[in-house]
Image 1 (tube, helix red, strand yellow):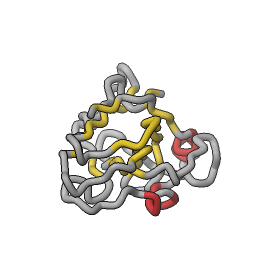
Image 2 (image 1 turned 45 degrees about the horizontal axis):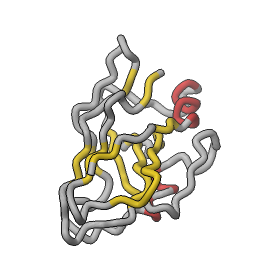
Image 3 (image 1 turned 90 degrees about the horizontal axis):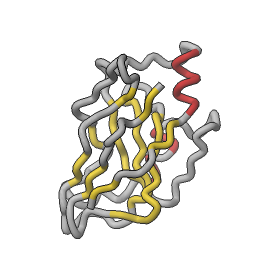
Image 4 (image 1 turned 60 degrees about the vertical axis):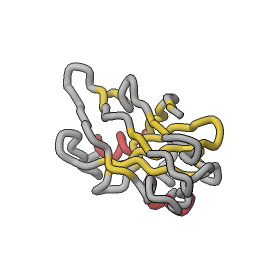
Length: 143
């Protein structure tokens, strides 16, 4: 199953960067995406709940081998011409012992744990009946 939903940027990470409270280098830093259940709640404009640690307790159970926790993004680019953060599509392989209850993808900066944004799948999805692909056709976000 391929998932291509709207990326909801979290404003707090922008505030942290603009005020110097967080240093994120899109050219060299590492980023990850974690999958959480519908129990997670998001407010993209709030000052609280803006770190991966605020939501990691709602992560889908890592009972299989294809998803064992947040996945490191590859092919991360941030070209100044488009000012759009992008990465390769994230593929979570089919796994008979996988999960069926992922509702959100949470994209975050590894060093600070700050959430860049999230995607709402609109329903619970999983990787038991086939691979799950998180697509980023227009990049994650642009400034």
